Image 1 (cartoon, rainbow, N blue to C red):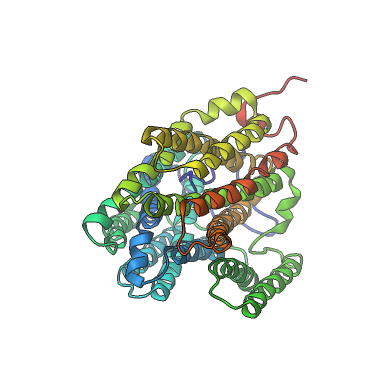
Image 2 (image 1 turned 90 degrees about the horizontal axis):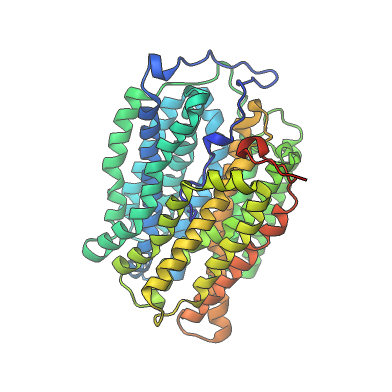
Length: 500
């Protein structure tokens, strides 16, 4: 999960134009203004936000509970990274299909079914008696999450008037921001005082309430003539992503012999190459690669991918470091790690003003350096540090990284035509999830290599220091990529106009 819990498409990024159907496709009749003929946009936003809250809460609570769960399954805490990556991988594989499925079967039906799948996966996770069972259950959870949040966001974009989109997105993001703030604290309390299995059971009442209200208030928007579903593209892209991410995951833990690992990577690369050929010959590919010809979109994808290496690593590394390296309980580490999410919330009130003041390009270049630099300081954390100093560093790093994600998520859509917005959202969100998964794999691999090279029988604080430096060393490369943006990139969106 990203350090910034609202790492999603902001309403402010959408072009102020009327929807235009793609060539050869017909849009369904416009949905009536929900403020007049249906539920108020705040009601719709809050129902969708409950799903996002459930997903974000689940991820942050789980990260805090990993060391305790490792004892139950009798595995190394480092091996528990697969519980995070399996979910994120499932999101990456199935998110591309979410828009087409919603257009064909109706957003309300798909949104409700996604909640059911997510809750069912949560119940199975709570019943897991082995790491393999947990991973399979997390994949089912991911299938629900892949349809739940993107389809919910699609409902907002298609039912809320343009003038109300910014307010609607604000209502959507408030509960989403609360989840990661209380997640570490709730997770620490549950693990310390109850059983880790309750971190999954808490999704059940939230899901039931969300399902009831969704069936009443969520409109059943869909396209009159949905695009032909690209099943072959989904198989090829899914195979490629699954093979590559799982090979990185298993390679980082050293649990697969080199020949099998090489075969898995080769299968992923071949499937990826076949998908590229397929996408060039399909009218509506599941992932539209031609979007990378748009400079602001492609640069955001590339720079954002580098930054999300660190974004995915932090929720995995920090709780482990606090519990294994500092000897804290799960509850104590939760009180420490939630500080970054507080920084993210504080930034939300400032990001618009900052981007208007300095513009996207300047903000993204220098903020990439600041955000990465403050996260790199985590490598120096030691039990001898005063706790107030650790809190301050985490607060500042969360603040700056939140600004970076907000900028990426806005500039990516600055030049996207309205009729390609759905394809762009699917493409961008897929890469978000892949890179978050890769961040966990890279950090776990760095921990493993550092421990082996140093000859430590168990993971030590110095190993965590190496892992933090590795992931931030990758993320700092985002700064020169951001420098390739035009000086006036996103000026109409931010309100900043550079003076020559």
